[in-house]
Length: 512
Image: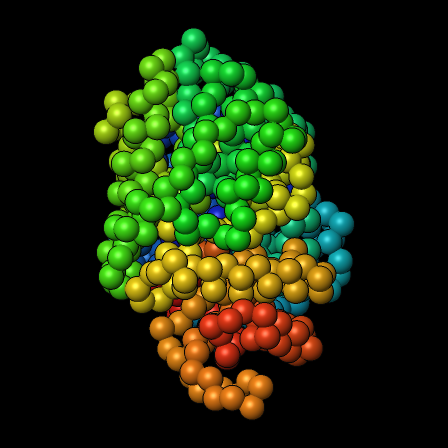
């Protein structure tokens, strides 16, 4: 997809995805592979540079992950981060042992002024440490290029062999100039020009889609989310009327969701979309069901049944387009060994095999924020492209307990008020995901001098970069007050609002 690329070998760090994201933000394409990649496959990728990620293991442990070939003899620049630094020292003749004092948190980096990796870095740069081992003997030919108060060997290099290593994590936001360090590696040391962006992706993706599809037709399942919507616009730009979009209104959508989606495509993109009214099917099958896993399975099966019937009308369709993203791909590859099991998109799981169709996944190399950038480049309005994620099962997993038409209407209204107030406060874009949950709990209240016994509504808002970890959002109290007041006053059936302040982990973002 990209002419120049950086390969990241994953040794199990929780930050590996962040390395790839940061490098891509610099305009340089980066891909993650397990440490166990073969030398032949590695060479076929033709990378301009290699980054070795951190990891939880000790390099000297019997079960420690080590590459299957000499990664330092490939004739390209190498940057080792934390475990990656220790691996390089261990394999090139140095020594690594348990640190006398484990180092975790911020530290002040004191770097050599003339070192290329630290070009234009300030004399008192803050970096993020997270390690229990440290270098106790330098490999031959290497020199120390940075230290901290606690780590006399914080960064090393051997310019002759084009190898650099840092004990800290430049990829995390706690490292104040970490992105500049990565930029020095990929742009200065690896000599990458930085031509990876939304525009270049669209150009190459259109060419690839046309080559893959040929004269066949493509079906795209439109959930109403950002990924499937941007995907449909890209596909239409590539193959025009050979694309057939199908949207199923499950009855579990946000307030007026299906109408907004239909209007978007009709007004902005002049694209046809088939709307399937599925509320009766979904609610009928969910009647009396409370178990969340059972609800998910019923919703997934109902979607497949209705979609399959609708899709059969397109006899020349040989491809099913899915909005699979890069995290879906790399999370399914085990650090302990190679694996090629890819997660299916939640809306169309099982359909390709069932319908004897080939899968088209143009976004399988992109992170969520990159899909949003592609959407903007394609002209998808900001109000849509910046929308928070919405789960495949919809409100079915935000109504705890049994699902009814009345409960759906109550939650739709509450959720719409919640999102409206977040937008009014100018906070929507600061939040990764916000939504309301209807609890199977009633509480006593007093409204208009009368006793009420109605439902409790929980509201949730989290900050995150990719949804893998998340922190609860700290609302100004007056905003929470307005949200609570409006929901209780305007939504009949709710008399109490509570705010969820659970982070992920230990909790999940969704409640079910």
